[in-house]
Image: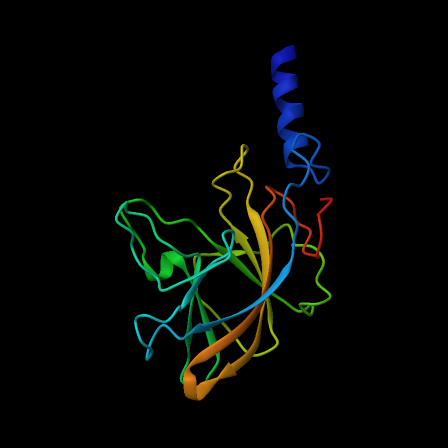
Amino acid sequence: MSFSALTVTAVAVAACSDTNSLLSAAAFENSSRTFSVYALSGTSSVLPAAYQFTAELLARPQLLSNGSVNFDVAFDLTADNKVKLLPVRTVVPLPPGGAPSVGMLRSSTAFSVLERAPEKGYVLDSMLVVGVGETVVLQLPGSGCVYGEPYYAKLVVDSILVAQRRIVVGSLVNRNCGFRALTVGIPKN
């Protein structure tokens, strides 16, 4: 094996390792946030029914003039008042500008206790139904990341105000490329 092949192999292994040896130090602080969204169905088209995690923006799902979309996950309610989490590709499968792939993983660990995003087990681009108090870990597209690493986030449904079709959600987003820490503060990994 040539020296350059060994170097490329070493770089690839290091880039994917947990030590983040080739990645920049974390630049963004993780912080918890609570927000309200409304069910996609049965509510006014001016009310936010989706969330763009890395920008931490509420939105009504839409296809933008440049062919991209303005959200990662949309929210709706089932007939029995559970929350449907709808990754972007389940709402807008083939927008002209492409739709990012979003992975979700139900966690048995409570939101406040979950400190690190798992390495595997994410289901890409599939709807997930959750109840109040259930924790979900998200693997989000890292479009601004040099090596294409994802961003990670966690969310929990805090409450559902059925009469208003409003869903209160707690979230924490790690906007540092490839970092899995899901705790408040500057992540170390």
